[in-house]
Length: 155
Length: 157
Image (cartoon, rainbow over all chains, first blue to last red; front, side, top):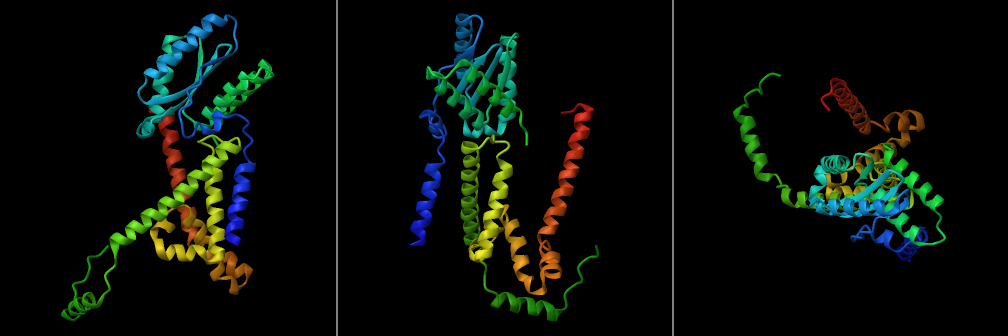
């Protein structure tokens, strides 16, 4: 009997804690989501969209990476990606490489690059929330800032 | 250190006799058990780490701190309930080497000495085994941090 009780409690805990209201984000741990890059605030939307697509292609070319979520706000581009399992030993080098290449190509843009799963999760969530018409640009910007702050945290 | 003194014929004879009756340790079996149980702890640790990433504001980098604390706490509870001892007997190093072994070392020492009183028993003996982990852990962290600081200062990294 206590075994079943334990199982039941853990089941309640696991299901009860799911605050994520989006569908894709929680599954991103086990599958590639590859969300289309999104734009929060921009002065010239069409050029920025072209740029985001080109960045996405650049990221796809990197053999070490396999899933990327990109979001742009003003002149800051946040890129979160997943690294192939055996390449995870070179995570820092890959991050430096990706950032260096993108900064060379687009010198006017500030890039924030991360291989952290939490950042990836948050960016995918932001993508999904932005699909909702009730989700304002202000809220999106706030979430963007939160993710950037989270990326800077070390301890 | 001085060289080992040469064994007398009597001692050598005893060694041979001892070898004859000694029960052989199943090294491979022990290794396999340690591997599986140690790996199982790591799976639990990974799951807890993802729990913190999913439901709290922890990144992969920062989630390690609460994960370690939770693992140690679970090991402490299991030691108190007497489960960890059995696990230790079965898995050996598989249960002692991961960070959970630290929790086990603290609580088992506390349980062992509780009859001597809270201050002189539990208080002074709790970190008998784990104390060295803390001491050398802190000291080695200090040395590594010092080396890193010097290297950063010199511009190497």
